Image (cartoon, rainbow over all chains, first blue to last red; front, side, top):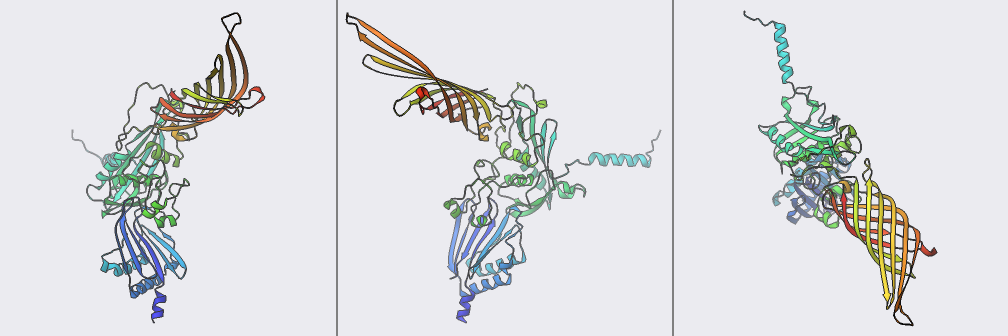
Length: 133
Length: 432
């Protein structure tokens, strides 16, 4: 079971949530395969204002991996509402077993983006982090 | 006698009242059209879910940016009667009848803080678009920035955020890329030339006649003419000085209003000669250029200069003089040369003509019978010459400039050889 658990959590994620314009707030989040999480918060053109780094547990990693599978992340389109300008966006890059896929949601929320963020925010709740766009 | 209003008369009066109150709107959200000698740019925006004060606030913000009048010069560079006049109309969506709603960009007002957006870039004189705007925005100028998107403009900043780079977003399209520091910071620097423009990185900057309004006209296949020149029928001698104010920046928005004639007076250093015989001489150069009215970046130039050098040893003295007369073409490759807001102008030229070279030898000797004698000999020869070079001007005003330097390659072919001469000049210029 331990071997299965470590195989299931073998993924990495990079995320940007926030302004799609030249002003406004921005959030950066990255998770490596070992569960190291780094979070940066700032404003566009004004730099990073706040940073946080900590470890996710194996079960938290497994939960995130599950939601990535549930929303069929690798089958999603590359961009949603690409013709929209300014506003806010969510960009998520996930790598699993050598495969990488990036999805951008621009001024639009879909069932998949909502599910992903709900799960992620549940994981980050104890650290006072809320990813939103 | 008591008057009785018949039903027909009542209906006519009612229709008349409805007609007199009915607004006349342009057929789409962004309109560019020619009206006499002017070009009108009209932006129509309708707000849905608006609260009390939204229409007035948005109208005031857009008036601050778009109550503009931009001059269009005549072919001779002088001011005519042509202008680009911009106007924004903001109404409540609920006040519009069904027939008028498609004539407006449809904006949904949102409460609280957020980043406003538009659904897509507008196209002048085509279907209206829409978006969502936050009531509590970063700056009222954000509404001007968004309205410029509705008018057809894209962003003019280089987006160095990692995911945007991966999306292939290239707003500047100038071949430059983000520096490592810009990528690390996720910065959004303005594209070159847009540092003071609201479509650059700072939305609080002004709407600019030359950068923004002209770009919208280009998107609308400029109804005046592709060179943005006021036609002859709208041009006349204008002796008054007209002062126009851009309310949002306090500057006077102007397109090219310079004259087509230019005189430059320069001090020059001329290196003359070949590997076997050469010297450095000094002198003066004068140039006259007449630029083409329809294409003021190209002109015909006449250049004249005289350079002299002398050397001596004891009683022997040699004087050299060179008179160059050349004519040809001057070209100003960058539009900045015509933009009164830009401080520098670059030009290149290719001229050909004649060089007249004179040598005078003078020696003072002693007479065997006493006293001295002076012997001198002068020779003059001519050669074909060319003058290929470039100049950088610093514009002090629309009339005066400093030439900062001018560098020329001016070979001559005296005595069956080739002298690879070069000239460095600096001086002043007057444009009229």
